[in-house]
Amino acid sequence: MAFSAGWSTLLRKLEDIPDEATLVTPLSHDRFTVTSPQEQRVMMQFLDMDVDPNQRLQREQFETMYRRITDTCGGFELDSFNVERREWTVDSN
Image 1 (tube, helix red, strand yellow):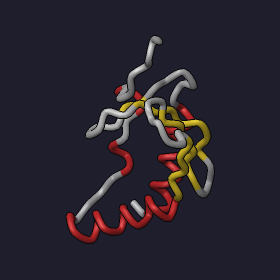
Image 2 (cartoon, rainbow, N blue to C red):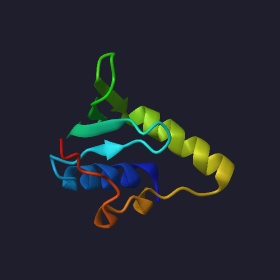
Image 3 (cartoon, rainbow, N blue to C red):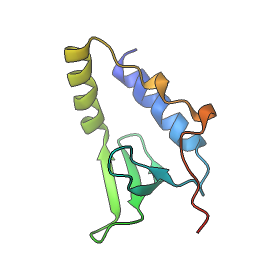
Image 4 (cartoon, one colour):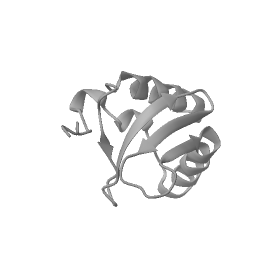
């Protein structure tokens, strides 16, 4: 899958996540919400950070990561992010 198609898929899947969903990073277990998936960036808000919790992840950052992974590992599919499996947690607090 070309990066542009994968990016479009990612944005669509992020838009499908319920507004009340709290996601958790896999390594640091930081909780965050996706506040606005946009064509050039994904806006997020971290819930447990002492610094500015609002973060922007630029499309260019994702594209750089995509290129590095495909160049070194021989494959990377954004389709593996499956909204139907509900790989997020909803914080009840």
